[in-house]
Length: 116
Image (tube, rainbow, N blue to C red):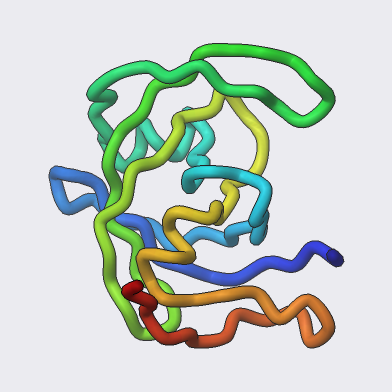
């Protein structure tokens, strides 16, 4: 699937907000926020979690909560705080917003919730 970016607004627990370009990455479990952005948003790590990074490298990253406004919707979602790199929009945030990826058109599409 081709990679593409979307614009979203991230807000931390002290209401500090920042617009961010998010690389859509359905292979990432959570939203990923680079440490520099996490510090500006004053995110608070609640725990750490082992992660497997593309390429097979293992690490342990802090997990915080952040508010994400995207495509006219707002959700509070867990996020990894990465040492550096791009902000990534992972599967949990996408599913929480009831969004899926259209890989041909390289865009996000609305989906229905599923119970069953």
